[in-house]
Image 1: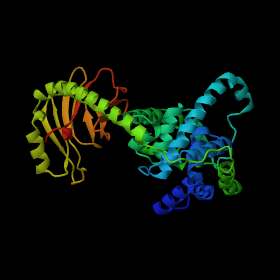
Image 2: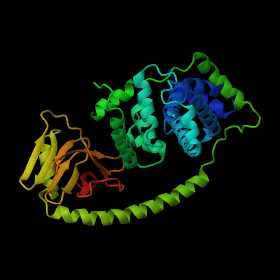
Image 3: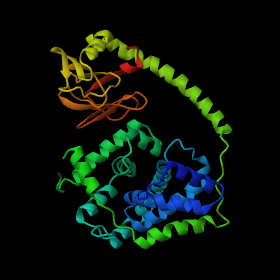
Image 4: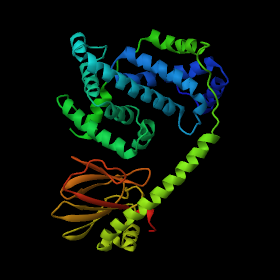
Length: 183
Length: 199
């Protein structure tokens, strides 16, 4: 991700608010990898992650007037993407419940899905097995390096709830990943 | 496996590479969508109606907090009254005697103990009072956010959240003063943020 000064970022946000989509494209280009990675951690699929990231940027553009600069623009975008991911997971859970047998037949568990190595695939499989809110807490605190307070703002819950979700998620992940070599 | 080892595994996990072509085309695709006449342009938001709502909400919250705080204070102060750690002067003077070295002041069945760090590396923060009874034994401690202490035979990490609440995280439990999250059923825990009282 190319680094951008906060003045440049503020100028691009102002231009976007004045109806200049090309200015917004620069912001999209800067933050697309971060948002697509976050969406991938939440969905486990490159295609779904791309679709979610697209929705996040479109929603971000429409809601740009509500961005007030109190938080970083990247954190604000991250919050939109995470909320969309949580909605997506809820929809998927309902669909999976209906089509669970069909899905088990067509998606073999060993599907490599383009992971660079076995450890990466196993970690994502373990993340996929966490309840969605626990997964969101881990994605934000471990991969996005947010503090529990920041993650609480992103998820719209209290810091104690985030601490509890991280605690519960870690306990499950330790169990799921116990066979992997650790340093 | 401890938390640091788990984090190391999680962070070593890489993602499938996004194709270069996709990265190059993605912003153009977004712009294409934005230029559609059906998509409404962003609007600067008028905050006044929201501000009025927020003002009313804050007033209600302050009232609720004041009532809850008064109720919680009476309970914890009853415990503090029978406890040497209630002596805020003692705590203040101990901290002044060993600047940034006091990790905890513990009071249990065996008396009062001072836990000091070898170096002056304890971050300056509000002292936190914790009282735990496990059914057989009780112990009280004054410590600081981020410190790991041994209480009722368990290692417990003490954390202070942004609102001054206290979170206790052990190997097999987590407890928060601001929310009814999980605690060990046999334990009775009372806490007080001494930074919120006059020291």
